[in-house]
Length: 471
Image (cartoon, rainbow, N blue to C red; front, side, top):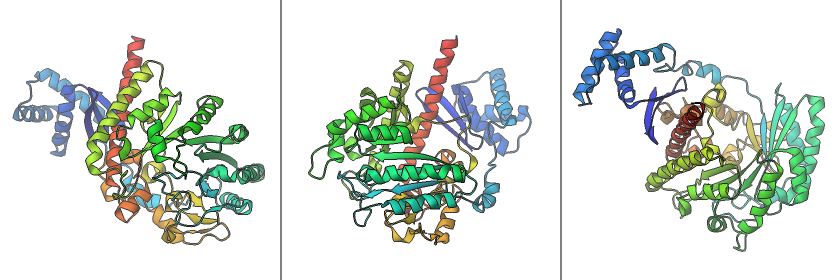
């Protein structure tokens, strides 16, 4: 499978199955799909292919191409094919049965340390922290059992991950500290290493908490939606007052105390800010160098929900943001934007390429009562209750369903050029919009494809910049 597109003046060709990316001139860009047609017609010799391509170019009224130049272009294209960098076959689908039957271990937990929150964010999937249930804080005893469960079910895996999540986890901070200490006590006897992370809205953040977090938390996620008017509209206190002014100074202290690494500010854009690139730029202007801005996922009846008619504006906004991203990088004022960070050389392992985050298999969420769900977005949906920290995973059928969820089980993923980058997307979004974890969230897919195209174009533009410096 070959995907071609033009962005910011770059003619980009992606060989999907090998992951090879080629930035070509306009002539080669026109010729590559015609050569593919010729190969499918089983034309073998360069002479046959040159004749076929020349005839096709004439049919479409293409500008006359010098015969020798055309032959040289085609020879280069065929050399890429022979090198396994163009027109490559799918090497993954043959292994899918083996992949589905693989033995899995649990490597990460999302601990819902608090089903309560001190904000009333309008788009919150957790229903202001309650997750379709009642307000509650996780006890130390439940959290301890969760960590024991993780160790017992992690097999030979050494590195384990635990995210303290909510609601707002700082509302249960003493238990967070106790669980970190308990986790550390498990490391040496069990040959494990815990990587703790924290997701917070920042309202309760103070110097004491930050000092502890900087010692123990490998990453801190800070929720903020960008410009003050946008943030305060969507992330108010329960009384309606905004939270921007109280969290931004704290977030700046976090960023600087961690040397602008191992944290990120994470926003959500909605129909209220289709110009979300302005919010990303605002956060960068405020001095944040690690930024994520995610599209809201909401039912169509919500006034802030993204709609199909918003797509042209949203796609254009990603293009604008990509150009701004390049400009700032070149000026030495760059920042990292989560969706533009792409590895074209190594990339994720095969398992990640095929199945994504590992929800329901390698990654689970734990409620304050110790119930186990495939991930935080399924919490409260009883049909996805897998077990609890006392008995372990009881509904192995749910685990097996998620184990079989991959890009080949999703019909719309099979012919999508971005499938090995998004790994089939979010299972919860697919379920909520299609009724199946093997379905798709079409609007989200369109945005994902655009982000991948922008990310690859950025790589090309920055590579050009490096070449210019060398010359």
